[in-house]
Length: 342
Image (cartoon, rainbow, N blue to C red; front, side):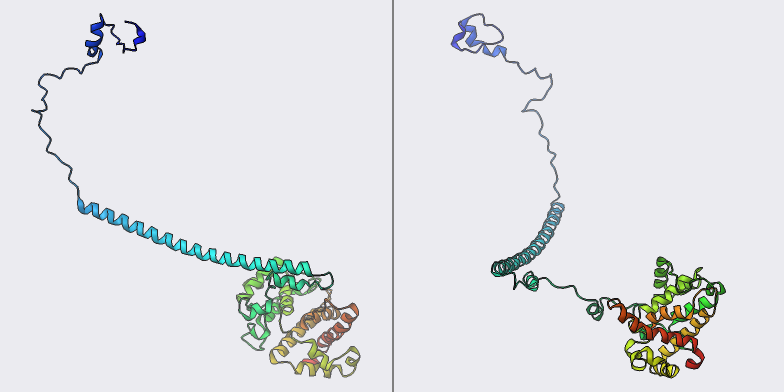
């Protein structure tokens, strides 16, 4: 038989043409014979066992899945609502900025170099100035400290007589109790350690004076006293009050004690007591030669603290004129302490 006829060729070559058509099943692998005794389909028993399904458990499972899907759907719906709100807000801001930009563009195109106003630029851009400190304090966003950077009437006062700020009494008591501190060169003129002063500040605001009493250097104690006087929002003596009784240095040369007593007499009781205690302490400091501090240097230093002068933006001539009276006033309070305060 020729191969071009396309007949299927078996692996076993047929003996003749008749075998090629009649004996094709001889090449198919036959199923192995079943063992003897194997039950036939008719005689094989059918299994009666079946799977028992708990319909109640299946229902509970489906119910839990349903509740979980409902919860997930609720969360997705809430997220979608929130995103819709944010999208509306962003869209509104975009439209507002787009309108401001178009107005600014029109103004820029029509503006000239003479009538250009930078304030209009801020208005068009919808920019606002930062809220000042006074407004924040009125809104109680920035609150005054318990001792520093506050008003004298709000400071914690000494329980015993005389009624003065406790921080003033504590600082003076720590300095005068240690003879080494009082004889330290540059007392009140040498700056103390900034970090130590800030730590003391936090403690004193919490009405805690233990660390202040354990200081090994007098300069931090002096720094606390100077810081308290410097940061008072209402000074012990204002420059306006001083100008009523002592307008210039020339008038201080006549009846100096009387005018200073009148100046002190117009103050409230807390200020009078504080000045009296402070001037008595400064007189004791100036009387010690070892600390190299005299009444003039103390008067120059404490005049800026007691009168709370802010003269950084004035000319030197005006600065000397305004500081001369407070300086001479402090010097007179120290040198004539008995005649003025007693």
